[in-house]
Image (cartoon, rainbow, N blue to C red):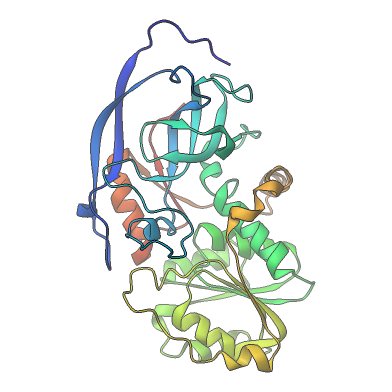
Length: 351
């Protein structure tokens, strides 16, 4: 715990704020970078941790928080507050702390503002234990998205040796990890992505057995049938919509669908209506929604296991890094048009 002096330095604090709530497709004009100041110590009487952010994560789930929801709506997290720093996961270095679990100099990851310095709540922070690995990995494979992939595939998908697995958005932050975990579990794995470059990445970098560019396919169900003629045991879904509808036709008896995200639907004012739901009944398919909130209790076990896979070369990481907080709005919006290749993150400072 750092001891506070009578006076603390005050420094500039750039932050990305939401200018207005969004309907439909967001634009960079819906956000802006503003300059504020911050005192480099935790305010007296507060139990908190002041963090200098080194990396910020860009994730599709942020889109829902950019819209205004009515009271009583079901949401993953509260709406962003207009004019205040947007919030997501990040990696940083502790500058000051009034919590006994953290001290100045500690490297941490967790919930942070989209800003250069954040006064963070300790219950949403984790110490980084593997500093021999790139710190940026804690925005992805060793952070929230990695835990999402691990808990979703292992606990909801419940792989058994020899499963036929399909992963949508397979080259993204979650998908790249799911596919590699599936291979470790002894599955046959097929992925879809939005460009030929990403398809090649799935096959050559992430070890997918097969992959296809969904934008080049006129019939998704036929594309799946060609590549998974015996059907699908586990579908890890980050897309929803037409892809989920096509997958339902190919599910095997007793199959499992892990519904982790629906990026194809986030900017629509009227959601796609599924037509093939009957196959859930006919083939006794278990469909289960998954978000990471209920799985942070397993983080320590996950971190050690995943760090081991990375060191052993069983899991490969691809990151798409942009520099500077001014680049954050465009990087976030790029997720919805598939501009990123791998985990999208923003580097603010080197340590």
